[in-house]
Amino acid sequence: MAIKWFEKNGIQYVDVMTSCRSKIDPTIRKQPRRRFHVERDKMTLKKAKQEERKLEREALIMVMHEEQKGMSFERLLGLYELHAMKLMKIEQWSQSKTCLMDSISSLRRFASDWLEDSAKEINSAKITRLLHKLKLDGYADCTVKRFLGDLKKVFNFAICEELLPGVQKNPTVGISIKSRRRKRDEILLYDEIKKLLTYGKLYEQKWYFIWAFAVYTGMRNGELYALKWSDIEFDPENSLIRVSRSYNKRLRLYKSTKTGESREIPICEPLMKVIDELKKWWSHEQARNTNVNLEFVLPRPGLWSNGSQAQVLRKFCTEIGITPVCFHSLRACFATELLKRGVPVTKVMAVGGWAELKTMKHYVRLSGINVRGVTDALDFSSPEASIYPDREMMKAVGEKYSPDEDELSKVIPLTSRKLTMLK
Image 1 (cartoon, rainbow, N blue to C red):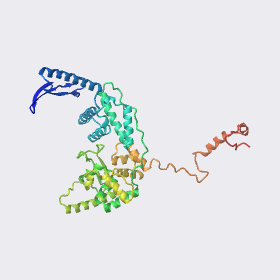
Image 2 (cartoon, rainbow, N blue to C red):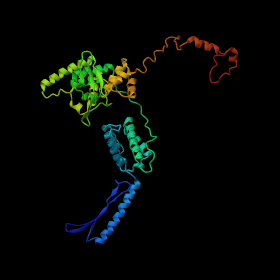
Image 3 (cartoon, rainbow, N blue to C red):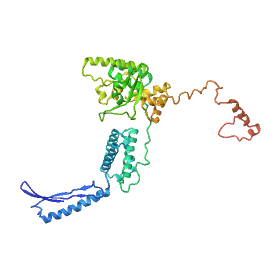
Image 4 (tube, rainbow, N blue to C red):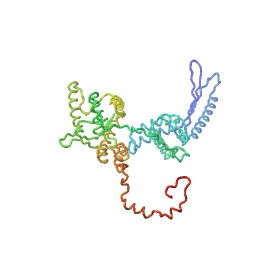
């Protein structure tokens, strides 16, 4: 509360200000202010104090109104983010920092119309309408489902911390996303992989080395980017690659792998040939430029450093006439080709760094091994095709329950179909 007298351009003014903060929610604070012309408004100290008391009542009413309205959704998001960051520091938050930043960003972007609204007024109907709008706008089902999951976490936090008085049930409970028809899975067949590497070696040599390593090792994009020569163990009998780090382009730092565990990948003969070619290429580059960094294994095209590897691969696949896939699909090609060749699922998971069998089931379906041999028993070319395991047993059962002539004579003919058995 303050009364300030001052002069401006030869004219006397008085500013009357006050402040009122909520005792329920300290973030709610109102500071109304009025300016008066001393001569025109005939302002005196007594009148200024009267105006100050009026402003105090106005500020109190404004605070009470905000308290009844409740915490805004934007404020709730801010508290949720602070809570998550605090738990992340003591390693008690399940998400990584990148995932948390993405979830907060999507919540602010998709629910931008809610930011000034009261969080406790956001109900199931309001959420459902927003989800339908997102689907109509063309967002993928997985994106909408992820947004719903993030929203559920925010309201769980609000209810546990008692930030929304009167709200006892999470408004996202009972809301589900009906998935649309799955699009065709993007994956390269065996001949397409050969064509990609053949044309890549001729036209995109830098990318050829990157694509070849992705197909022969199944390493993720960040793991390939962070691969160093010190991670490769050359042995005449058992050469292998140790994968222990990854690179995050958004945070611009090297970190552990996605699962947090290191793994070893045996080097097959075709990959060893690629490595030999890569060594010669690096020697040539070093002869041309003395500032070449030989610490990392793979070349670093500018578009790869900028995160445009998917666009480069799709465009090249289209140009050579094969299925346009994203960069991560090369990892799927690695898994499906191993499964097709009879490599056990557990070994593929260990080499590729998959921690959950649920994810691996997707690659099993793509490879077709889950239905291999199912139709081998079908044979319609012969009327004597064996359908039952024991024909003699079934024959005996059929004779035992065969009706006699007297029973057939008691059958009442049906008007809806012809009677072919009785004569």
